[in-house]
Length: 260
Image 1 (cartoon, one colour):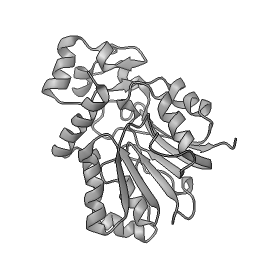
Image 2 (tube, helix red, strand yellow; image 1 turned 120 degrees about the horizontal axis):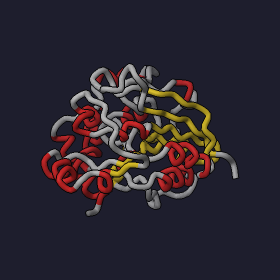
Image 3 (spheres, helix red, strand yellow; image 1 turned 45 degrees about the vertical axis):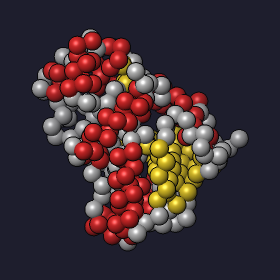
Image 4 (cartoon, one colour; image 1 turned 30 degrees about the horizontal axis):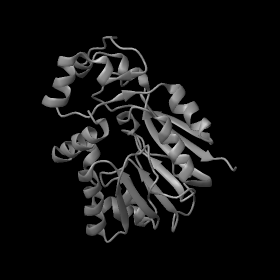
């Protein structure tokens, strides 16, 4: 199967089902952003610290990487940034265009793979914003390399991702609040689920295929791509998640592209 094409269509289905990561920001959030009250979510509950962003975002070139859904991009455009949103789901990109038209914002949308940013020149962006999405690609290292390539020296990458420990557990039990250790890390739905379970996931539930990358690839991968990690925080999946109150399973990093 073409995993990327499948996942793009799965996210189109999630838009139709109004998944929380496909619901565009409302007019009030845009109005607050225009007044300088900026709240960008890269994980589930917490917002990224304002000091992680440049003081003045007006005119900065920002790439919202695998960030369709009308959430981060419109808020950044509302504070005056020059925003491009890249995503593999056409329906997710349509959410950004919807907000742009509704709020009179200028947002460019590009359908593409987060691992291949060849449509953008080297050192094109001041900031790359990558909410929790690299779970949907088989190899995360090209994501870091491409993000680094398109950033200007001194540019900033803000990235949210999953702690892979969440993939240790049996999925059906997990969804029913039971923690049964079943898998190893790195994890891949396509490799680690029996055929019947995989078919149910893809055909019955229309869920995206997921991959649990090692923390080495998530963190050292950024360093090897020429990025210096300067900020870090953890977040929970929310009140209904079985691991909430036990351990935070979402991570966000701030990294700066080193010169040379």
